[in-house]
Picture 1 (cartoon, rainbow, N blue to C red):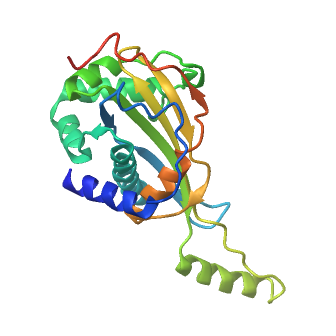
Picture 2 (cartoon, rainbow, N blue to C red):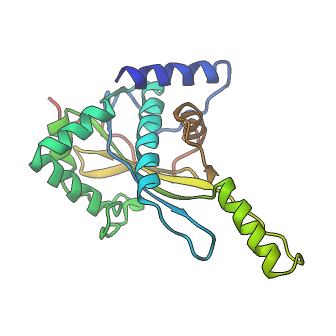
Length: 237
């Protein structure tokens, strides 16, 4: 958790003096404790149209975005549960892990999941179970995708393109990018209260730079927003 606090401090220093829009989503008084749940990313590598999922890079970027988004929530005034603690709990507690999978499936962010129309506040399964087990007032779900094209890949493909076309065509490297969908869930209501989409961002592996990019995206007005319940039903108490 110390790393997340340091990351949030660096983020705050980098944003000092910059006016920040405050969408109605950011209500740390209504939801004091937030849990950013593990993030599923699907990163493709290779030369289009022959790209394929890169499991190792997908897992790596899921962990980096988990850290970065947790830091953004700390910067926004929430008490945030440590990402490593959440992952450890999910690994040890089978019932919690199953509840998380139910939640991820109902939100459409797990393989085989079917989106429940969360953009209009559709019901989500097991949100209260997950929040109660973790002691959280707000759950943050996220998933995303992207493409990564390395310099080495571009050099090789450039040589091949030149040979095949006898120098008549040059290879143009496709852009590397990341995009993240964020869903903010009120577990007492078992439904999302807001959703945000980052749009395409540069492919950033550094947690500090990625946190700044996500912070910039989360200043936007949410794609949808419901008025916080302000804990007419508080799952942690």
